Amino acid sequence: MFSTITIVTFSPTGGTRKAAVFLAKGLARQIREADLSLPEAQPLNFTREDLILFAGPVYGGRIPSCMAEKLKNIRGNQTPAVVAAVYGNRAYEDALLELHDIVLEQGFKPIAAAALLAEHSIIHKLAAHRPDVQDQACLAEFSKRILMKWESGQRDITSAIPGSRPYKVWNSVPKIPVVSDACSRCGLCAQKCPVQAISKVSPGDTDPQKCIQCMRCVSICPAHARSLPAQVLAALGEHLQPFAGLRRDNALYL
Ligand SMILES: Cc1cc2nc3c(=O)[nH]c(=O)nc-3n(C[C@H](O)[C@H](O)[C@H](O)COP(=O)(O)O)c2cc1C
Image 1 (cartoon, helix red, strand yellow):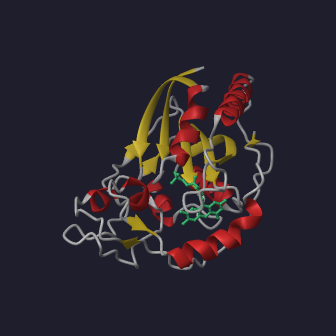
Image 2: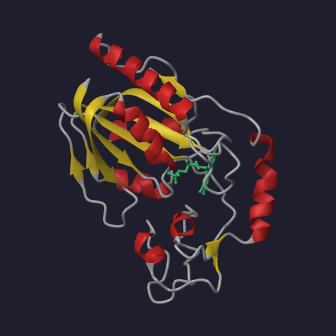
Image 3: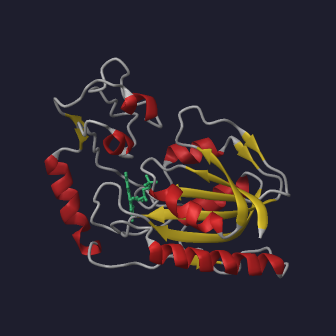
């Protein structure tokens, strides 16, 4: 087991972080965290003595572009890394490959990659309540396999990570949260928005050019005043219905 692992996550509603912590617990005795969803994420440098777990959510089969942008401020020096794309039961498409490629470019050495499940942050019936105890056991097993590989001296990922280059283009339909009269103007949403899309003086105003539809504001609002428009939710729920009734497996690429 490693003494310390740093998990570098972008996790607006917490599912990605939860899955990353389950995996990290089996890899090292101590966990440090770098949270890229904070508006003021700092540049970081790592050495070859470190171990990093990069975990990002899947948005439209890709890594969120703002996470990809923030990763450019994080540099490794042949630093071993595990990469994880966390998705909500539909598909992860090119996201895991994209995250792998980014961290490689930044000077890290990916030794394992994983596609993990977490509750869909918009349509909650998909992968509801995951990662759960079953996932926790599965991720503990994954971490043992990663450590066995490391101890055997093998460093390269030999299994093919799914996905294609160039990565798919995600043409997202705008899904901007609306605000009800319950809003107390506490400003928490504006403070915690990873891309500062919400006005601090008038939290009802969300900049549609900046909003990445991450649902953090919806999930953290103490007054439950923010939500997606009912029609948008209904259309997306119908679109994703085929993925609602199945339990997908976490996948490990070693
Ligand atoms: C804008 C957006 C796009 C998403 N696209 C996908 C997708 O393409 N495939 C999928 O299975 N889940 C998708 N999801 C679900 C997330 O990948 C999943 O809920 C993830 O765990 C959210 O991470 P978080 O809880 O750390 O915010 C999407 C969620 C959002 C908010």
